[in-house]
Length: 425
Image (cartoon, rainbow, N blue to C red; front, side):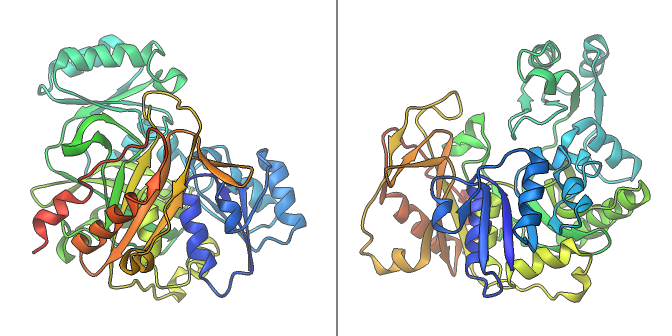
């Protein structure tokens, strides 16, 4: 197979790594890829979606896989399908589940899927009245796409009103915040679940947990994610069944009933409160950094999983995973997430420890290649991935690899997977 991966981050790099170990895959293209993805496949500098579809047609691409949300909400799947190309991801209409938080919340409500009480509005006075009736802790969300950063947890009604005003006036998130969703704060713990869907059928991947806050102990601002691990011990078979019956299956039925059958990755951001699942959000693509810790666990050939999902044949597939744990630690640039950072050359030590050498790898994200040297370009630069029989073993290996990576201004959390380690005996 010849495969095109659309995107440039650690998520797309990790999908590329999974495909590279797949004997069915002969050639991988990245569009546009990053400074390190050229070591896995060929980078293609085409951004315009119609031209990218022409490239796929001209180069006999057997399967395209879409990584980020932006091209999905812009209709890349529809464009490819018009040219009779096979592509993994939801249509433009189905991608509204992430493209508009208001649409998503209304979908949840109309399909009886458990979620927090909410109001969606562009009217500050209406929102203020709703906030006055709520408890002190309140969640304010920008309606549109904000690269995972458009959610603010407010500790008081006054703060919620202030943040709402900033969003509605375009100060916080521009056009994405001109409509807001304000909802009750749910007190529990978060999980990330991913269902691979083909419109009718689905396969649920092991639950992961992301660490959104910048600093240890879940302090500081929200980020795109500072690390993740999978599978998490914070879910059992009973909760998995609840998620299937209360969330995944009614979602697929509702999307089909709406005339927008869902194919691709359904990312379910869950809050578990007293053993009950509540949907915080849907995303229409793999989470980043969750993808980086799920791909190494996938035993089934990745090309087979994505191709059968894209062609409506998931019912023919028995999906398998390695009996391992995986931990990923994000190493970010100096000014992340506040602003841009200067280019910094990345130096990787020669790894002599056999344990680290054989059970870890790096997934590259915000990097460029200049004169055959890798440079951190800002944001989340790379992830150090560790595998093990236990979460502690995987965590220790991931952090061992972190110590081998150097660039000016590097920063990372030191407590990834801490909640799971409390559970693991």
